[in-house]
Amino acid sequence: MKRILLLPLFVFLFSCEGTTSKYEKAIADFVQTDSRGTKLDMKFKAEELEELHSVTVADSVKIITDNFNTERDKQMASLEKTLSAFTENIEKAKAARRPSQTMISSYQSSIDKTNERINALKESVPEELVKYENRDASDILKIVIRCTYSVDEPITNKRATETFDFFLSPDGTKCYSQKRVKK
Image (cartoon, rainbow, N blue to C red):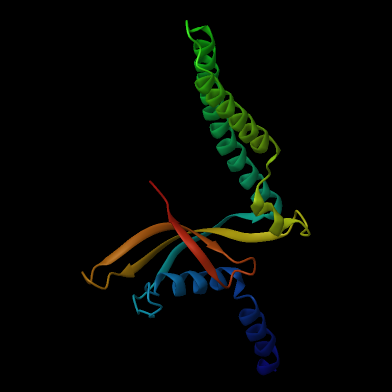
């Protein structure tokens, strides 16, 4: 009778290992692998694991678009300043006592080229969006996990505790990168 009761209990315990240990394994592998791909035994111990959020296709598209628009606005402002300077120069050249046709045509050529660049910038779109064209906006691209962990430092042999945000694959089995949490 005891065996019958213990068997379902063991099955339940092993099936409830949960996603925390899956995240912990991916993070431990990432932390304990050096830049050459060599695995180190740093006695990794996760003190605290917290799933912060997931990054979806829609989030990624918004980030890419916002960054692109910010950069494009900076370039547009710079080109507008350049255009203004060329316009002032052409006006000064035309108002001179002896207007130089060479200078006027040079400034006009520069104005035309700057206007072409402004128009091209206005019509441009982020190239990175192509990879998201046929994907569902709610698809999860990565999971962000905040982990406080302790390891034995290989050089000093001291125990260190650190907190990082880790960027994991949607299934939580592969770690892409980490970012130190500033306290």
